[in-house]
Length: 262
Image (cartoon, helix red, strand yellow):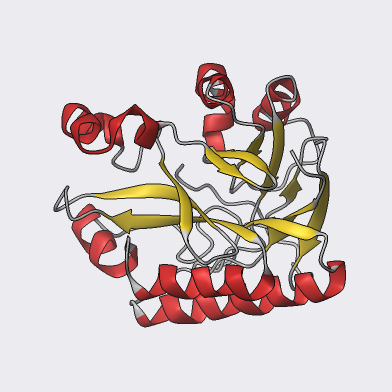
């Protein structure tokens, strides 16, 4: 694994009202990643964005409406634009997004995608443990037939190390973190979305425990804009071997934490 700087970047997450909002969200990401690269310099090689960074999470929308409004296409313009951001800044960019898959019509998944400095997706992990989002387990045999075990628990072998991903509360599942580690993972990208807490949360306990498995970089969002007072996000980063910087975009006004699905 090559020494480098990894940035857990906090960005305000705004709820989408239509697909036009996705382009604005990607533009915000580009501005923040570009500014971070200019500030931290060429040593910055890995940027991890928060969970739900492009869309927020579904509140009142049903699955069909959310799929049409907020889910990205694997080869869609949003991923192409995010790949261009990764290439322009010479970083590996980890984004958490809802996405559609033509092989599973009528469904969407929550995905962690790592885009390389070449602008290509080198890792696509679909969240396995969720009470609110469809998962590969819902179509398990068909999913394995299509993508194999390597597509379920992917590890990207890159010049900065072997990268894997988890989503939010999945850090609480020890065997899920251990499985990619046994496949060679050295760094976990863990986009998360948590209401701020000054105390030790279950996720914080789990992050400390996973240090023995691999290094971790993860970030919660800034204030979530849900067309009502939003929860204030916070940053999270276990003590990694790579130099993890904690970046924050914009000012977060104090607000009462609000619940959210995960």
